[in-house]
Image 1 (tube, helix red, strand yellow):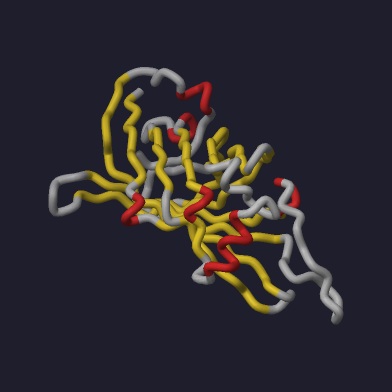
Image 2 (cartoon, rainbow, N blue to C red):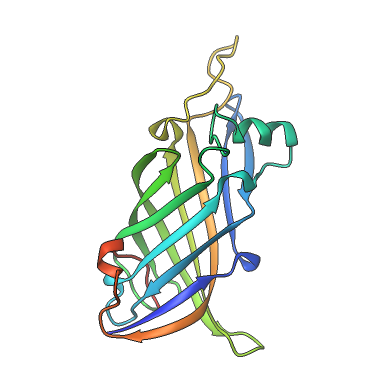
Length: 199
């Protein structure tokens, strides 16, 4: 099998999150620094996999005081846990055609806690840029309960409810550039798990 390895291009990719504030207003943020690789086998997409590393301190909601609180030990504890890591394990319903939707199961590590998540993924296409580099695009979304990763800080409201919702929506638009192609079973692929589609 031919495995094509794609480097995530952070200048043409976004990783964003959103949650409710005071139960009725959506607050959005993003991570500005991240990197990763997609190991894609078009002939056997269920054996493909991915790994993504996000710099915790790069979170940005547009409000410096709020960003500082989110980086603190109340939430991400960025000083002691500088990276959030996602590694895929399984893929369901993967197809190599543009517009295909499938699910990816993987481990999401935040601070000292690792929990399984399921991403809903859309393969957005493949093409060659003006400089001759081959690129692919994916969109991925999921919803998590932040308490599962120990992010439990909150404040009760006098009117009922809490200041920050526990449910967090994650949305990623990823563009990746072809880095190399290997023939045969790629070393380390099975150990890292399986994922993605459409190499």
